[in-house]
Image 1: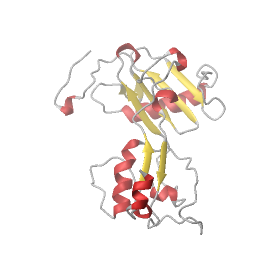
Image 2: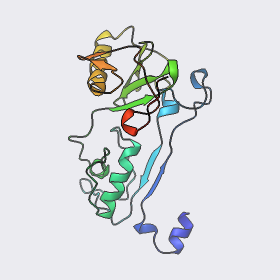
Image 3: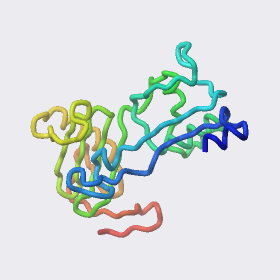
Amino acid sequence: MFQALYENGVLDNTAIVFTSDHGEMLYDHNHVAKGLPFDSSARLPFILRLPKSADVHQAGRASQQMRQIDQVIELRDLLPTFCDLAGVTVPEHIDGRSILPLVRGETDGWRPYLHGEHFLQADSNQWLTDGREKYVWFSQTGRELLFDLENDPDELHDLSGEESQRVEMWRARLAEELEGREEGFAQNGALVVGRPQSPTLAGAGIYRER
């Protein structure tokens, strides 16, 4: 691909992204496929090569210099990033945000964490991460997990029984995130275990309780 772009004279004016939809576990935590909140399923590669024309200079550094961004980003940030690169206004209904400000070193106002969820019958889960810690709540059983991703990147040591204050903080954040959802996962600032759920929301036009 790179060779073809180079031969056609458009390599320097092309944005290239390497990412994926999800991981496959591959027997991490004795599981395969996707759906669980562990990084081997939920964390994605996200490598962005910007065109030379992109205005992403950071403190005098060359725009083509390779660097790592530590803030949490999501697939929903792809479209706003592409719009930003193309000079197109991002549609108002889009949830994601362009990551070009992060590339420029502008981190103020970026999301403090991201929220993920999976519908897996009894193992259905909701989770939050800021890239340094991850909190997991299994909505049908109430089981909680807390991982220190910096010191335990393989998520082998659940700290939920040791770090009660951290768990309480993340639990409150998740309850705020889920407040108002039609399933009733959160009510009056508290998580509610065992609520009926569906792989699709009523707002999508199809709702089937499982």
